[in-house]
Image (cartoon, rainbow, N blue to C red):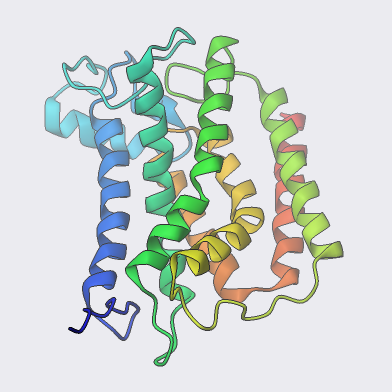
Length: 262
């Protein structure tokens, strides 16, 4: 009796695992948009972070009032620290959705070889590798909201915290530039197993995790910011360049300086 082979994935292999990757990406972005469209906090979406004014306009076109956000359906956790179990689950789903929307696309540029294709189990391992990050992010979000440091639109209230986060990101990327050895194609054999997916996910964490933290600065509901950061992370993992880490470090430092000077 023969066993069915695990189906390969990648740009050149449009099979079951490829559909899985695109389904995860689509699910992440759909969930992010659902959060924005069902946000039940009074105020304009323009307050949700840079670039979100366009969604306030879309909301006005769809519903007639950009300031009427009350809805019976909400995918967002409570805007205070008084969370119940359902709020924890909503926050966890939000961060997992961001991982699917922003980090799973990396698999499209860290493509498989013809002889060593990605497999569904490898994709699963890659996502699982990001679950500890999601858990920590949920804890940080709760702590910030409990301390009244996040606005109703999930944006940091005080520039001092944003500056601290950006300086931390600058230090992390500068450390990556100074101390990291030259990056090699350790994943050239593709995600052939759950363990291989875990390994790639763990390699992505120190490279892309700091960029994910910028969501606290630009707003957790900021779909425009998510799109920009996704492009940066895909570029970072595709280029595999220490020099790009230096560019990100300098960029975060300049952003912090400008924010502190305002």
